[in-house]
Length: 158
Image 1 (tube, rainbow, N blue to C red):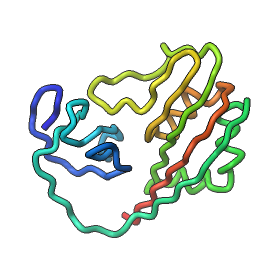
Image 2 (cartoon, one colour):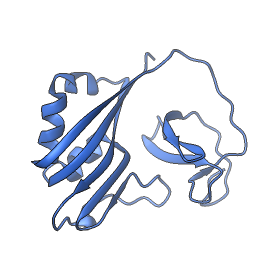
Image 3 (cartoon, one colour):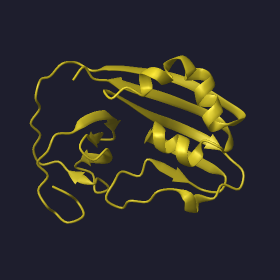
């Protein structure tokens, strides 16, 4: 059920990664991320899960170290050969990690109280957890930062 209004959730979600006692999941129809668990901070409170066996997805995780660089350029430099595969329709790419920044304007970030908070930022620090690549590039791509990131790409054969 949805934590916000207690309405029943009956849909198909793709598991992106574990999170505490639950999972971060993607709703493919809307491209929205949710935390599905029994935790009070979940957007979807799990009461029952039914899983369908489907073709396996291939997940790769790569590390990117950013040292006083523009975030978008650092990601592109490390993964430029793979950006073509990142743009395929059956591929989802998510970024996790922590970055130190100077005077970051947090007001530019998207806010959806019904969705998992994948970017948590202050003027001096940005924490990403399963943030969609397109959102990271759009809102953080031109920021100078230092820190480390993990790029998780999930290729499904559907």
